[in-house]
Image 1: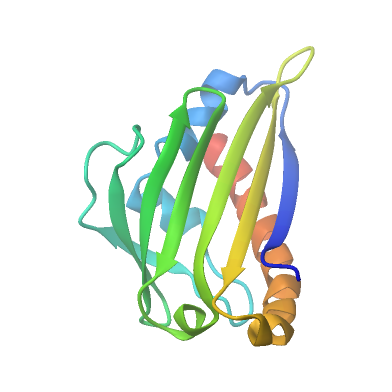
Image 2: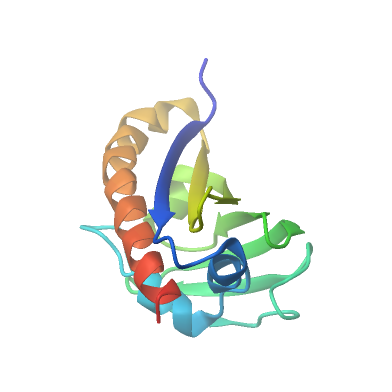
Length: 162
């Protein structure tokens, strides 16, 4: 029986943005940048704020609470950090509809330098459903989540170019 749903997206950052310029935008992501990158998609809520952050968001074990536009919250914890190449984190919904569907999700970001300049960014997300019978609903979320990820990556490139 399948236990996790995985989605991976990638995007190329323009040639004049080296990995050292791309990684800090995501790898050291603060609440203000999150609101500009994670703007929601369809019924998936936007990030509106982060609170209670421990540390500079640049070391494994640091945590923060993410507040979403539908009034829900999620706990986020960095689980790995290897600047300027990758970072991983776990998101645990505390409230809202997603907290009924998933126990947690794991995000992974990789940053690859491209020959001749620029950076390729990969983002992988794994949702872990609470019980198998929730899979039909998660399949609908998966369709929306792919669009959410594509939009966020496009907005990330805009943010990197700021």
